[in-house]
Image 1: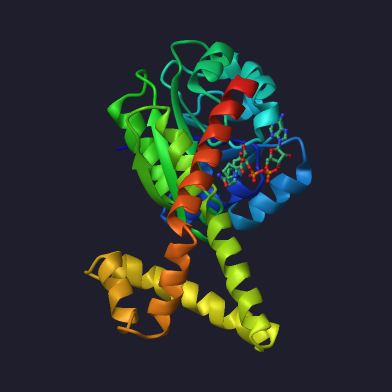
Image 2: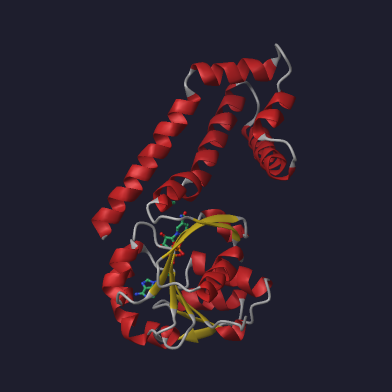
Length: 272
Ligand SMILES: NC(=O)C1=CN([C@@H]2O[C@H](COP(=O)(O)OP(=O)(O)OC[C@H]3O[C@@H](n4cnc5c(N)ncnc54)[C@H](O)[C@@H]3O)[C@@H](O)[C@H]2O)C=CC1
Ligand SMILES: O=C(O)[C@@H]1CCC=N1
């Protein structure tokens, strides 16, 4: 597969992370362009890799194999209509904006445009992201591989068969980092209430989350077995887990994720 030319429209946090990952994975910086109205954003990006900084979105998009729309959802309509005439017939557009549907993008870019809609998450900033991807029918096999090359540079990726599934991806991995942060906040507060100083409670909670995540990823047994191995019969973990279950933790998680998915659907309607 030849090296695709990749254009970033918007050179903020996500673009910078993806560029960092791409270059680390061996993608040549001279095959990457970026446009952003704020020179400071472009300068920050160029500290990560010597990409070609463009003076307009048109200059970045013209003739690029892959165009990554890494701008906030609120400016997507303006950005898409602005670059629609710059796309080549075989350009692939990848959007990482939450709540902007393929339908909306097609209405701004043209119905024949190959589009991948992606829901990333913030650990992409550390190369540890998890992204869900959906492709419209115009996306070819080669373009799928290009999308995978880009998103795998910042972590794991998973294709979903229906665009609607991106609402569930948003509820799970898109918003998910915040759930773990919230749980850690609650654990730290509880540790402090039991007498630990906040610094100690914070470090213990952070390392416990890291250790548990690594065991979940790297161990050859499932989550139930991992949990069983911590839970001595009649011991402390059993007391805590029974307390969680009695308080309806699973139902709470299910309702919270439904609220997130419903909101994702609502946002797509509002912005579409
Ligand atoms: N699921 C999630 O947790 C995440 C989703 N995202 C999505 O990624 C997208 C980008 O987010 P960030 O990088 O965090 O935002 P950011 O604010 O860091 O970057 C956006 C960049 O777009 C530039 N920009 C504004 N108007 C522009 C225009 N007309 N043309 C070109 N560039 C323009 C801004 O100057 C800025 O540098 C958003 O749509 C967001 O929804 C990002 C991070 C995580
Ligand atoms: O909270 C949000 O709406 C965005 C989408 C997923 C993560 N952040």
